[in-house]
Length: 149
Length: 275
Image (cartoon, rainbow over all chains, first blue to last red):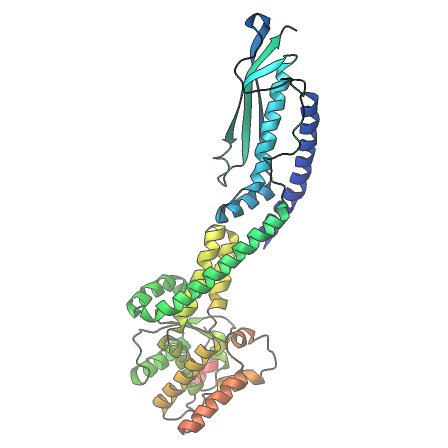
């Protein structure tokens, strides 16, 4: 009985705290995305400007590790039984990737454009928690170019 | 083409959904699945049980022996109970079992049939009985469960339930251990039909052995007169209402023309025997 109570408390806490944290994170993501709108990050490998105009080119990367709350993990494990879209993980991956992109842009400083952008995702702490994906790392990297105006 | 930076209008990667609604849907689906599995496997058990040989059953019963014998208290009353069982089996209830009677020290007024011919008799029951015929009827009733393989059905369903809980929560989970402990007892309770059939079997055996049916209804009479229902709660819960059982037995006695004789008394220092 105590076990069940403990479990339900964790679920309820996971839901309340997890939802609050996620909302706050999304607010911050939207704010910073708006702030970095001036800096395009594209998957193209080159820019149309001639080479002489490129004053600097450097590797920039940003990575973010985001963990999932207990409630969503439970929801996902239920979903594992029946199959289908694991909706509870969608926001986790979305947040991680967008956060990584923003951090990459922060690293780029006053560059004009980031080309050849790639995003990679990997799970972390899988062995520590045998119940499946617990938290994941999204890594965004690209080449930041500064162009002569 | 001019580059105009802007935020995307909507997020296509995250499905707008209510996680609570999803939780309730999935949990309900899971519960439904467990219930269906339980019912289907329970039916399967009822179908399979008649085909399980007594050999296999004895082997399964062997798993229980250790824990049963640990609680065994050997006593003079136990020896007497064993001799009654042997006599019933030799003369009237020829069942393909080697019955092993276990006397357990407990105020519970009950006897339990377990796979492999194990009969647990609680000392609470031994304290209550007044005549040998009464005790023989209760023992024959338990033997009736063996004759109809009821105990296997009971075990089977309990087994299914424990399997499901271990599957969902794991073997180490305190919840499944707790379930296994409590379900053994509650799931061992038999359906009314099974009890009635065992009663009928016991009545026939009693008549066959003693030549009369004195003492057959004594035990139920005693329980229905008892003022404290809590004491007999377990027995009452697992057995149909005693009034109905008494009248059912009386109907059979009347229709078959069974006679009442003088009940055989228990050996004299019965009450003084202490385990």
